[in-house]
Amino acid sequence: MEHIKQLQAYIANPNEEYNKFAVGICCELMDSNLFSDAEQPLQVFWFAITTFQNNWREPLTGLSLFIKQMDELQLNEQQKLFISQWLCKALKANAYSDRHIFDNLLQFLESYCKKLKASAQPVDAAQTISIRAKIKELVNNSVESILEDTDRISSEDNLKILTRFASLVVEKEIPTYKNPTPATANQSLP
Image (cartoon, rainbow, N blue to C red; front, side):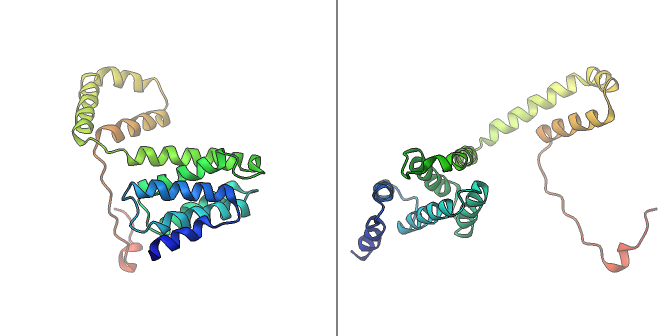
């Protein structure tokens, strides 16, 4: 019962437009287990609306603060997407009389949602391996032609092409670097 009272507080806002979206968020949360605390998305939603209003002249600043808040709360991609999509709905629905000032922000927010949707899609490891193998085979079968082509273009373009091919074929590994100690930092190369 206490839980319902806490949620009710978010719907008792003098801004009726905000209340509609808060009710929508609550209803959608009832059908999912996306958040362990149903109050959290409402808090973030309210934070975002307030932040966007305070930073309407600097939409990227408002968006950056919103994303930072979600990162600090350690929200996963699906949770971030849920809140971001509700914010897009609110801005699109002309929830605020001066909506036009949020047009740029809405474009950035929609772009952020696309990025979140893409990162939330599961990656099929078998398909990735298969694609890498096919690209590797194509490159191996075309080595002579590739060498002829690389003779005709600049070294800088050769490097760009090689880097792009390598990123597709070679599995990504994170290099580890050792911090130089004072004794080895001043040594010259042989």
